[in-house]
Image (spheres, rainbow, N blue to C red):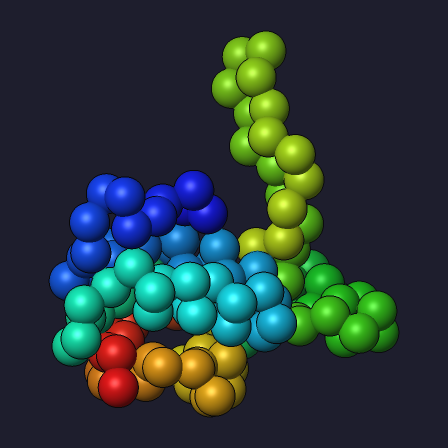
Length: 132
């Protein structure tokens, strides 16, 4: 994702399904990624992405993890993960599950705004984000 440049052309839509809005990582890195998306998209572009509201749970393990994150100065829905397949693995990276209000806060000060959300099952939602 970070390697996409104008060499491929300009985009009208960026699709981040499969909970890939989590790749925003945290507020600061998310804003930098959104600025990059601004540079490779046309006026009126959209980001359609899926994520999960981490607060849509009553699981004690999830709630304890949220508190651990807050105690460490991290967002409640932030996780540090890596992807593995057979002998291959990525470096560790941050992944952010956010509520619609938290997503709006990340978008503040960027060229993007939250247009609409569509709720799905068990806290999952799709966000339509438009270029201002």
